[in-house]
Amino acid sequence: MLSRVLKSKPLINIVKFAASLILLSIPFKLLKLHFILYLMTLILLYAYLGQCWNILYGYAGQLSFGHAAFLGIGAYVSSILLIRFGISPWIGMIVGGAICALFAFFMSFPLLKLRGAYFALATLGMAEVVRLIVLRLDFITGGGRGLLLPVVTSPWLLLFGDIWHWFLTALGMNLALLYISYRIEGSKLGMAFRAIKQDEEASSSVGVDVFKYKMIALLLSASLTGIGGTFYAQLVGYIRPDIILTTERSDEIVVVAVIGGIGTLWGPMLGSAILLSIRQLIYSLLGGTYMGVHLIVYGILIMIIIIFAPEGLYPTIKKRLMMEFGEAKSRGTPS
Image (cartoon, rainbow, N blue to C red; front, side):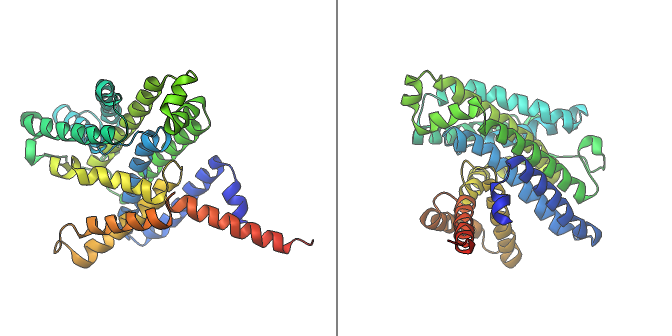
């Protein structure tokens, strides 16, 4: 049965995944275990962000260490629109995603001329530029003080009184992104991405417009990450540069995909569940006593994954299960 599930169509698995998570969450809602639901919501949020990053690197092969820039832009745009103009974050989410895409468009001209480590380092610089701009525009962004969102309950303002509604919203965002990713994988766009990831020069020689497709990957990844930034800001209730526009935030987005499996639909989800659970366990045991311990654990975890499961946990586990069930089936078949 498990073997058939692993071989089934991704869309069916997406529906099964959604139904399973909703059923799993209901007892926590009834028992008012809000902490568990909050953790599940964070896992879904980081899975979403990891999959956004996955589109750029997992599919198109462009390694970014600066996705906190897009996360921050989306968060600040929607928050400013809400606080200063009373515009719903549902609208601000779209505006933030569009501004992220516009920012990525202008950044693509210098960035996409670079390759490999040079591109990755340039994205780090890009994130730092965004952080400095936010600090400089303190009359709009609040500078280092940040922005505090209204303490009200209003679904129209993306401010829920029940954590279960946050959970359902995060789940909906993931389902939409999983569907988009699934469609990309089986499309000409996905084929172009994979060709560029494998060999840019060979792709160009057979007629693939490398710059155009790399730009599409960057714009798509940036805009979707910006949408996640709006949800992040609304969930947390406040934003500051030292919280959202940090290298640590970018690293966490990368790590969830690396742990789970780069270039896969379900890798970021598995990676996020592991990473967020470990982080919360460390916070619960140590509190704020030893700052940065979770980063050390992240590093150790990545080294273990690279050594024992270089493709990521999801592809490794899937292959192992397929092999074992295949062997069991062959043993059970009369010769």
